Image 1 (cartoon, rainbow over the protein chains, first blue to last red):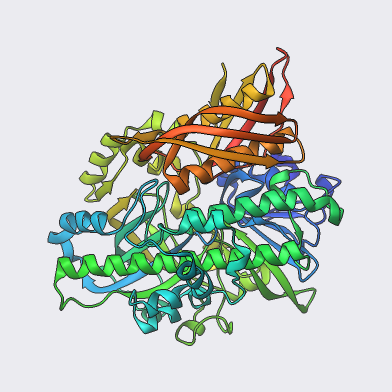
Image 2: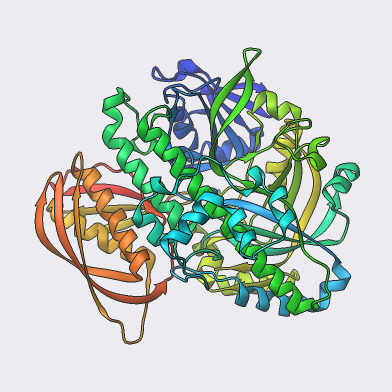
Length: 481
Length: 135
């Protein structure tokens, strides 16, 4: 563990582990946190892992750590690292196994009063319509040719096949498809793992949640995003399923074997990497992009399933669910940022961190460009979630990045020792939250007490200026695998 | 204790120990299967799959082996309970996995990671390593 005295306080919300802390660090590590939350962060190996990230060849400025950080494997979860393009490295461990795990927020035109009497049946309907759980495939089984089209076109494939509206793609980060995707860089194993998983949520901390907007912090930005008090919205959290897991597995295995060829030596094998400009680096980037496209198509099919449930519950004439935005929080992208007063192309790694581009950025769609990109931050099950907006300060300080959630603070075993799934479900029901889950044990693992307080996490990014608060959401229905 | 779950904030940290390296592989397979908790299928069919791998050292071979088993598990909806060794050395193995089809699993394992994995002899003279599973 890293002792607190090794950190330098820059201001109330930012701390630094200087480059001098360990001989192999190439840059410092910077941690956005409050002093109170720092005590928790120092309790696991998150910051040791962040220090390991600073040793990666080509890393620029600093390894960054968000306030929802927790121990992972290789990179910490809640980590951001920028490598110089094109010769800096790309590290599959810096994206993680669930490539393009992310969050999408759907907006309804109904208020709480319109849906209050429907919540219980809506929960059952969503659980029935959106396949979840481990080893449960969806209703679509793709042949390899069709799967390759999904990997290439992402959400475009889904919309072309009737799983969405033409305008949906516009409201997704990168329009729901990365152009570099190359299905031929994805192994047969990965394709076979994913071919029956499109439109499925999976298990663990993935969910579909019906929320109510309970607080508006910035009425002008909320209006731009189409959010209003008491509005019903729906959050989707899932990723690229087994296909993405296998892409990461394949390339971490490959890269750790061939690193010596590039004279790379690292403190942790899980950080395995090669220069992006190498054949293996390019192949991984293209395979990762394909898996990211699969994840966007997956959230699109889940959106389609949710729209079906919505129509069944509220009738065919019920108003449509539209997309506010969809953010990736495990991904690598080539982006331009200012370093030493000069624009530089960088290989951005975000693992458990959300892109938070500020006002005026050309990659933010025109409708939102004046206020910044929507940043969707889900809380733990049964607690609040937030919609924030990216800022110009985030562009300067965090490569346009923010936190991605509440962040775990307790192991799954400890959570299960602390609370039983059935008791938790009853307790949440008393708070008016309808739970549908395939696993009470899994429910206990995701108990709110196992996570940091989302209000504290969001307060840090807000006070540090990385994102501004727009709206607070509270859950009414939680559907989990 | 042949295998044991140790604390980890988000994932699963498994400690495995055995008198032989081959035994360590079996122990790790059993530990991983316990974490996943297979859900039995009525009229399960017997399953057999062949795995052949090469790696830089025995630690990488173990992690690669567990990941290959995970792939087989998810692709074929099967669980594996036994190993028939056809070849085993420090950097290479060929095995036949023996198991059965399942209805599903209670827990999803995304991957076995190399983080903290390091096969060493412990003070008792047994082989030991930690494996962190991303779940």
